[in-house]
Image (cartoon, rainbow, N blue to C red; front, top):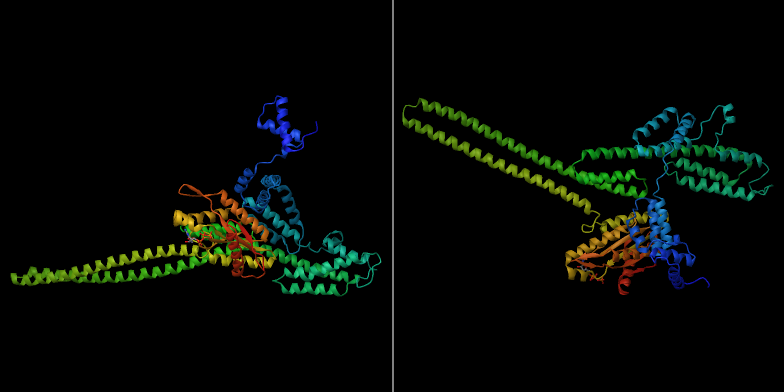
Length: 604
Ligand SMILES: Nc1nc2c(ncn2[C@@H]2O[C@H](COP(=O)(O)OP(=O)(O)OP(=O)(O)O)[C@@H](O)[C@H]2O)c(=O)[nH]1
């Protein structure tokens, strides 16, 4: 009998063979036999889609590599390619394997070699200073990498010129420069300025010349924003090479380029050092502030966030974020300081008033005391009851006076205490309002996503970044379907919870760099950096699927929230409002087409 071809034939044959071979018909035996008959391998088996999806949702995406492989897994799942998804999962898991322990022996040997070597700009004292800094400042876990960085810094500096006899044996010139010089002597007969070469390498040399030209004219100056004189020098060299390049000029140009390269290396090393120094200063500052504001949760939280940011590898996006957070922090501190000074001034004034009152009171009681003593004297000397009566009247008057004064002081004391309490409450309330205000500045209170203002800020940043880098940026506008009905059926509070649920699910399934904002009511906007319209469409449909999976509970009922969305790519320098209008039009089409769908709005 010929081998079964289609799956149902294979299945039938498998059942037959199970019976004929008298094998117990367990699922495992069935699968093995099925593969044997079909000629496939059992390791072609891949986990089920549901399993892979559940796993994918739980995979941490806390590092770039993990994010990338997890995204590949999602993409393969979305494309229905389970084998590719399984492979992506394999790659993700491979990435978790423990890395080799650092090779300390090699590192120490290289450090010793470089310590004894002679690099321009690196005296022994400077080496010692930088080594001490690394040793003092580094966490044990980061020490290996930082020492490697230090070593790179030393070795990137050109080797220091040695006395003539030594130079003969050394490889002090960069290899490319040596080659250039020897090429000049070897090709003395080649006329680069327009004459055909004798050995036919003309095209190659011409190509290299153009590359060198563009490196000196365009690439090098673009890195030298802060050093215009060096950028000019690089362009001058490019001009020289552009006009004529004769073999006998090569040596001079070669040494010119070597000098420029050396200065560039110095600048790069200095920049790296300045960057590391600044980061270290920032860490120190954060540690200090942290200790000073132990009692202030809000500040401590911000500082913790900042510290995490500066400890992770820096990139423009994380720096932006750090900058914004620091601005919030400074704003809050300045506000608090101002209010605190105000409150202290107020308390001081009250205290001064109270002290005055006390002084007046003690003056009154002092006078009272004198008068009563004099009355007692007069009573003891009095001969008749009439005279005593007069003195007693005076005693009564004086006592009433003191009583009145005491009452007044007591009232003032009570009023002062009340005022002090009111000030204290005002300070506490102000602090609360400040916390809230700084949170509210950019966030929506209900869902915790960005609000319109936050969106506008992020849009400015992302759109500028996309233009600078020439990358794509997509925008999506999504609107919950039949939200009014949900509100009417379950009440406004449940409607609010549904908004929170949606924001939570969407946030969980977006990439960290994507921006989610509540645009108003039941409308949300998503900015997707480095994403074209097709990928934005895929991302939005994936969110729709996740929402149907992670349903929302209202009154013990499972409610599936759906949304309609419009996605659109951003045009060059396009304002937010115009992209929003386009996305809104597409979202309206999605509603018209029956809801729970995504429509792409092309760039006009
Ligand atoms: N619970 C709650 N409801 C809100 C909020 N903001 C807006 N809404 C309600 O959202 C509903 C939006 O209704 P519509 O604009 O008619 O839209 P819809 O019912 O979702 O219908 P389609 O958009 O056509 O699917 C209104 O009833 C608003 O009162 C909010 O913050 N909380």
